[in-house]
Length: 588
Image (cartoon, rainbow, N blue to C red; front, side, top):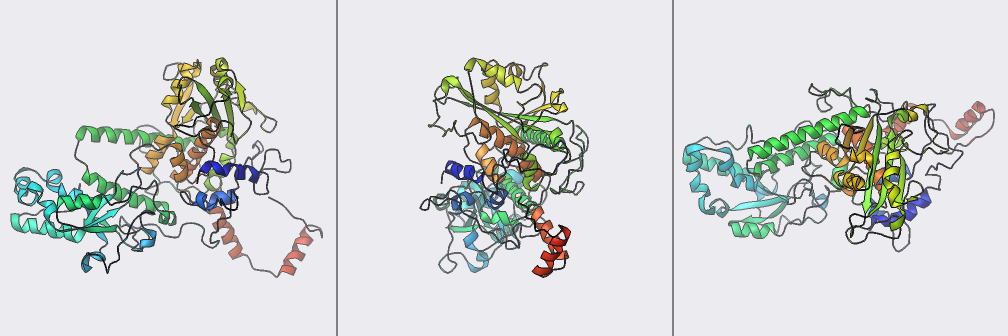
């Protein structure tokens, strides 16, 4: 289903009791004295039940014409169902109904050619890594002596039981080809016996050579077939389904620590396949370190970790030096440097790249969040995001449709503003000066809005957007990367997501939002994209800080379980006594 078709239903829901409108005079947020009004554009009850890759499809009924239908969930266990991993052993599920991808194929054990001892195997070795083993892990005379097992394609002329594990495209474009570890160890033992050597399959630098699936939460690799030649192996590999965008539905039942351990083990196995390139490895290591540093700074901006100091040891969530965030309470640390985040997103004519058609500008001021709890998935912080959508008057009738499906008339977070092309640069520059966003009746300009602030520029794959604004005479961006730059820092959501997830390549906005479980509609509208980029940043910060989903529900159930149950009549009488004999209903 096209996600864009959800827009009408979501717009209607904003006027229901589940949504909160800025124009609703009865709404009074419970926050700090200077807190801004809440703007919840999507019902939280729906967001919590949205499952990436499946929820949206289930939510649309073409025959009935409904944009949204209820998604049912067990109220007793809405969150993660498993405990954390104690070690690096992977969870595994032999149930073919929850395989690694929706289009994965399975084989009936009675009809397959796999032997009984390997059909129940839970340990596997990357097949290609074993085929390249002597070239990567041996040297000198020993590497030459292994030629009788490898030269001339001898390795693939042995009989191997081949399996595969589908992984998201962000990890690899192809599946991980595996053989049972029992066969790999047998092969190593045969070489040791023949060569009178002591070759080891595992050990330092070989951590990815054996994958062990320990229990029933992560699916086992899928049996592919038996091979005794390189040609047969290639033929079988061609039958592997294409890589999915995300892990299967099973991944939503794992806690973050278990999922991270699983993904780390998979990446180690892929590392065993790659050929050594010292220079590239050093560059990749530096790039990863820089991205992790930016992620740490970003978390400090949100008060989710102690003050970030460059070139010093930083406490870590992984080793327990920092406790996971409790979204029902205010953050433990101050917002480092009290920044204001300003996000931009640019749309231009896909046929005439020099024609800028839309500019989206969204802000999130950390001064507005003083005393405000993050809320589940950071929803209380997201409610403070303010967005604008500028449309260039000369190109108001243009809509991209060839390379992406634009929707310039579907700004979901306010009213679009039409501006002349010659004025775009000046208007964009004004957004980076006090009060940093045009104040509205609902958003009075507090004193801090008129002060010079630490501006953090936010975007996704920013290079193209910056070049477009430069060509449209924005002085702010003409000064970018010069001593006159007004920016305190720059954060790219794609790079931060890659650093947090450990992936090797940047994702697009839609894939990042789906992975972070952010319900989104009408992308490729500049205003919406800017808003969702900031929304994704908040959600990513919560995820990186170890947020445990369903915190509110668990707390409410805990309170209910500790309170004695009363008969309905007694409960009603008790409530009326407290309220002076009157029955009062409160609608939230």
